[in-house]
Image 1 (cartoon, rainbow, N blue to C red):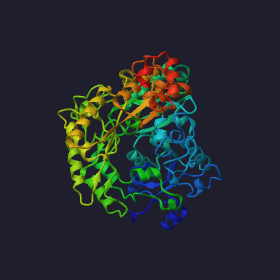
Image 2: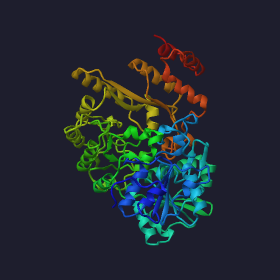
Image 3: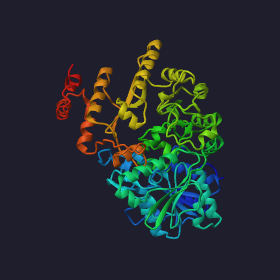
Image 4: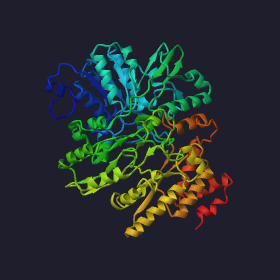
Length: 595
């Protein structure tokens, strides 16, 4: 491997490396930040470690003569395409479908450096310029659109991205292992159809694969005619995506079929370490210096990711669909090695902003009997109750925190990832963990996510009942009182989630007033591809039970629900009063607006 340096993003850099041709070119909607929190860097570094010459085209201009796409010419093996860390439509638009005026993954935070539906746009341009070169798409946008899906921004049911996007292959999820296998097979001059045998890929074919474990989904035409059929499809897809050993999924599109192969086995600790131990520079490419900082990097530059995956199963979240339900954890040695690299950085101030992952407290948690986990279809290991087969011991986390705190040069370790308080029991040291975090790892404010107060709405969200938050608050207040500190517990809430009605929001507001909260951390529900909540929003059914679900869909309904969060603002109170009267909820007026 060459000396530690950035992967090339300019032709001059390629020439300095003495390369006559690049093996793989990755086209990304994000600026290039060489850090393990950015997927383009992870895949690029993984392919580099496997012996391939990798170049990156970050945020190419798709509106001019396409010179950015042409600068490296055709790679020897393939183009890899991703919209970036986020779905490009989530990156561009608010829940009200208004255009955002910033982009955290662009230098200076400036918007407008990637197109809508970026994966589609990039792939079409590449196929136009280099029709003979394979195009492999991946990342969140491609992964979450691998089968028929509801697209909130066009308010329509869209086919698999492979139908509209001229890609030769889709690799879904956190796909380091699969991407290397793709490169190896193409390097061995294997024909493209041979890649269809790989795990964790999706492709289009004119025939159904001959595999024993296969699920035939309702066709796209049938789903367009019947929202119930689409809801039934989603339930089958979700069940399989939660399994370690899953079935092949097939969806008909006229005379073609979209085939989604089962995923790779979860990464081992050694494989996780190998990925995080790659020679990242841990900085944005120096080409961006004059354009300003990359906000997303500034947020995570002093954080350390200790695991992947989430078994929480929240209805509105895509983490398990993308990273998997099983937890893949790094070793303490690898984590310590990364922190020591940070300590050698002259810009590091000794404060770790986060030592966590998708959830803060799932490190090294897994099934006790792995055979029981292999085909387990449960969407969550902790909802509606904690699985008896789950090892939820918090001791490894407590031990890790102590070791990191003792490192010379470390001044403070914060836990910025969300904490799953529904994991705490008297047996798993969860409450000891909670006490340690409150007293030593928060900056006076601890954020938690009850999401709502209504048991019915929380059921649709697959979140614990609000009593869990009240218990957490009581324990938090007790810890602070005993320690003589005045910290704050900050709750997150969502309005307009499927199943939520205006009365539920009024009840939430009354409860928050009773508890003395003036809410800050709030959001309006935004449907994103491949979540249970989105399918409820689009179909009006709960795919798990096929019961009908009320959905607030119009901008006015959503605005009315969101307004309930601001009961304490005088300028909002006349509108709130009108809304309560409109829905015959007059009894709430004195409770919510009175002294």
